[in-house]
Length: 597
Image 1: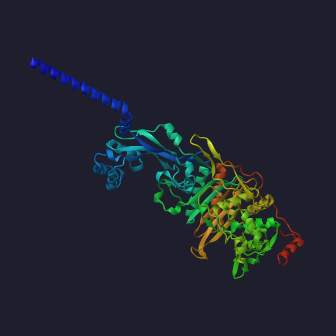
Image 2 (image 1 turned 90 degrees about the horizontal axis):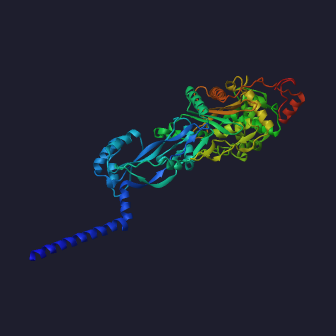
Image 3 (image 1 turned 30 degrees about the vertical axis):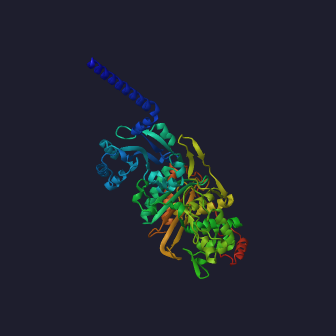
């Protein structure tokens, strides 16, 4: 009996224990599955997911025909979760060999209680594959993008480049960084068993992509300009060069070429002096190219292309300075002053019309003011107030010394002459397009002001036409089948850090447009410090001709069908010659009434 009771007691104890255990298990299950379900779910999720900041692809930069100039390639970023790395020192040593970095730096990143460490950005696919095969605990990957310029150094100074985190550092990449930059969001992403981040869905990536820029540049004309410019700079052993192509009627820039260039894909390998867009940021003295605007000022004042000025037979003293002409001349009309590029003739025009008139005309053409072109770092150039001009300043400015301009100012002013005297705002960006392909903002040609009357613009244009014909200084720019209008410029450079001109250092310039009637293209070529030959007509004019010929062919601009022979020169009566001479304070010009001017 005692044994039975003992057995019954043991059974009861076991039953109580089992029931108690079941109750405890039930309670624990209730606690886990009901009361603390969210807590344990989050803990579990942390093992296979993570909250990351995802940044969208940077927007593209396209030319006017939607050719890619700046785009982005898929890349991977390596991230570590230090708390999940089993052997920090060993892992650092293995990764450092593949990433070609310091193992101690990696080990230091692993020695932290934080859950996130950035190891490398935008790595190449082959490097990523090597690391993936190692299946290292705590090492995973995040989708990212790498900026890429498919045309290498084409328009590099205009486009600029991006740096860390795809932030724009130079050029349009810098100017429009907020437009191009991809959007950022914080999302929870899934990881696989090795800790690698699984792909973000394509829809999310598309929505985060930055906006695109469509430029006025034409990839083909940009290439032709850069190729010709490079050949010119090398042929003349020059320091550098610029070539710009613009549509006069709209102000659209089809090309902004530089030489030397750099490759923005690996900009770190080039000197930073090559990065800036010198067509916008740098000012130079334009030399005789400025004479066309001096002539325009005289015509606006009431003079005619046939108005004559005494050119002192090649030497003219202003105080202690002497102005020289390359060839001696006595009496020249304004037409001839431009054709022969007479410095003394330009000085005489300036003295006759007055400083304020010349300054006002140059200002209307945009000199001394920013053009507001869509590029960072634009210079004002230098155009002192007329009240501060000395006698030699007034004379020198008339023939392009003592005044400085940017290439973008000069091409805009030349285009104004081609465009019936209307100065247009230079246009580099056509529109901004959203990541969904819709136009956000479309830019239109903008008239700045009427610089001179259409009549004066036509007369100056004809002077520029004469300047590239038989007796002009720009004959090497003339193009068969097209009535080219242009003007040479050769300016001495100021010695760096001094107030005097350097010996044997020049800027060679040629600026012009074609055809004379209904001009389609304006082109500027500037060559810095050419050796041996340095006149604009010898150095810059042939490059202008090549770019103009190739661009007209590419754009299918038809040659003129009418005769390209210049109009017959005007004649003056003896009475009108005498009246003009008296107004200038000179003796009667030594030619007969029937002589052509």
